[in-house]
Length: 35
Image (cartoon, rainbow, N blue to C red; front, top):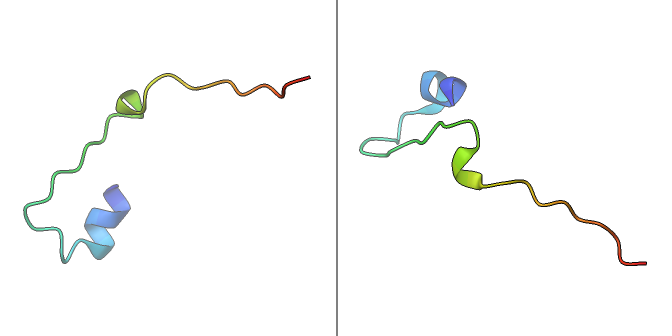
């Protein structure tokens, strides 16, 4: 996110960026193959 803001944030006026380390993504889902 820091690189985006420093390098390519020319069209991000008024945008909200959530940098929370993945908390909003939820708990990881463990996928197991059906056997």
